[in-house]
Amino acid sequence: MDLELNGKTALITGGSRGIGKAVARELGREGVDVAIASRGMEALEETAKVLAAETGRRFIPISVDTSNEESIKAMVKIAADELGRIDILVNSAARVGGSGPAPKLAEITEEYFFEDMNTKVLGYIRCAQAVAPYMQQQGWGRIINLSGLAARQSGNAVGSIRNVSVAALTKNMADELG
Image (cartoon, rainbow, N blue to C red; front, side, top):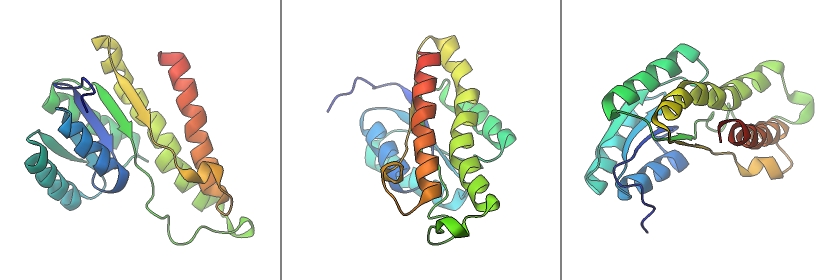
């Protein structure tokens, strides 16, 4: 499939595995050079090596903690410097499975809730805030926020709130940024 992305660049958080890795692979197949970011550099380096070999595109591994604004700013600067620009941001980072099974309503702690929201929802906001000026200066860009099925399912109140928040954030970003 030709999505007319050949020669574009992308930054993907949560890019070392799962959906983020799959998106990175497909963008590479479309001719996009990709910076992949997550917490674990070892997994990132291996993913970058594998995807570059599969697609023939550049994959740049960058360590980031999306719960930390300074870490995000550093990630964006590295990506922009290495790629020359950032055309596409894919926000895919999240706590992998949290710290175990989803707590029931009576078991949810503020610490658990805020950690989950800080990593994903606030992380997506921080990434968009850091990347949007590049896109606005270029006159072109796309921001893609990956939510999750938990937005539509019961049994995980924090996951539902987190993913509904991402959907609302995405709508607001689209209205504001165009």
